[in-house]
Every structure is written in C-alpha cells, then in structure tokens.
Length: 240
Image (cartoon, rainbow, N blue to C red; front, side, top):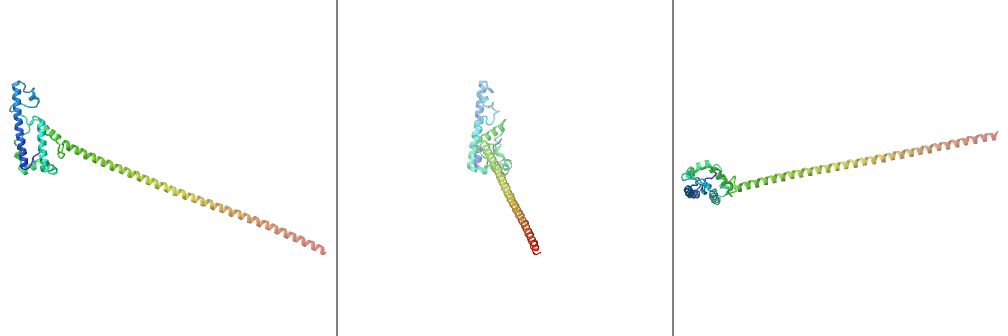
C-alpha cells in the first residue's frame, strides 16, 4: 500500500489510532450509503460521488483527504521519534525487517481495497516528508540535488573550458615569444652579415688603393730611372 511499518510501542499506538479512524470512517460510509439507498441514489448521490458504497462493500479511505491527513500526522510523529536517518533506514527492506521484528500481524486489520495502491502513492507524493522516496518534498530534494550536481558539472565543465583557454593563451604567448626571439635572431644575423659585408668591401677598397699607390710609385720610379739614364748619356757626350 505504500504505508511503512513502525516499530515500538509508540508505533503500535499510532496503528491503533489509524484503525479507530478507519472504523469511524467506515461507519460514516455505511451511514452515507444508507442515506443514498433511502433516497434512491446509491451510485449518483453525494455518497456515491464521494466513493461510498452500500453496507458490506465499504472501501478503505473513501475520502483521500482523510487518508492523507492521517498519514501526514503519523509521519510527523515518526519524524519526531526516530529522526530522518532511522526513518530512511526503516523504510528500506520492509518485509525482512517486519519478519525479524515479529510484526507480521500488525497489518492484519488493515487490508487493501480497490484502488488502494493509487491512494497510497498519492498520499506518499503529497506527503511533506523529504526522506520518503517519491514524496513531494523528497522529489524537490532530489531535483535540488540534481540541479546542484548539474551546477557542479557545469562549474567543472566551465573551469575545464577556462583552463583549456588559459592553456591555449599560454601556448599562443609562448609561440609569439618564440617567434619574436627567432625574428630578433634573424635580424641580428642579418645585421652581422651586413657589417661583415661592409667590412670586406672596405678592405677591398683599401687594397685597391694600396695597389694604385704602388703602381704610381713604380711609375715615378721608372721615370726617375729614365731621367737618370738621360743624364748619363748627356755627360758622356760632353766628355767626348
């Protein structure tokens, strides 16, 4: 039915209270069915629309609001007595825990009726207990946890993307610095080559100049020797 077993004397008293409320509600159902039967509207009157049937065919929890309220009161009591962690543990493995605790007979007076599973699920969904799986608060808690996980995932993904972008920027800066160093190295090499070229050209010009000077000197020397030979010839002629 979706109703969880409780342990201890307090839980037994709660179950007795639930049975009394059930009996009182079944009495109301029988009275309403009798009124409808007297008015000739067993299925179409107010009692029929409320889900109340003829005496002997009563339904458990004809009014869902009563069942929801009773379940909420019981869960609030259990919340105070056991606490969230114990409640969560007690609601898992219900059958085996009932057998170990000897509580198989606790539920004999409460039998499911037609559509009771849907009612139990509706009561569970409308319950405000955040630790009951499938409850409204539990669903909100689950959704909140999922949103938190999505936010964490989005945050991690964003951090990873930012880290990748920072890595790319670092690599780009390193590449730019490397290219800049390479460019400077090429510039230095080019200037050095140009300087060496100018030096070689200067040496070449100086060498040409020295050669030119040497040729002029040789010409002057040749000219002096020629002059000297003429002088010698003239002196010889005079002696004769």
